Length: 54
Image (cartoon, rainbow, N blue to C red; front, top):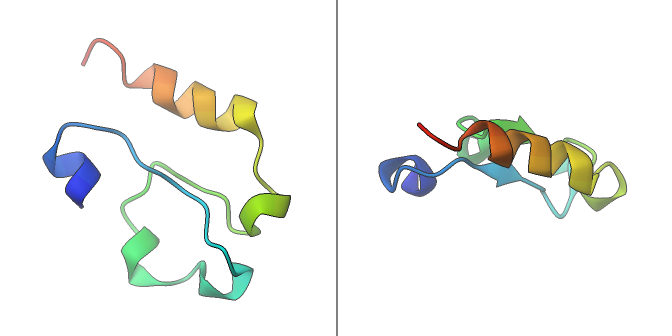
């Protein structure tokens, strides 16, 4: 919510995959449900780049 309030996009990477359903992650444009093992820089950059020029 804080990222959106500041006009930013949000990418979430839970440190424990079991916590991926936590409501705190609900507003993220991109959630790597499997944590760091699932993370790819390209996917994160694609989401962040999509927010430019809003």
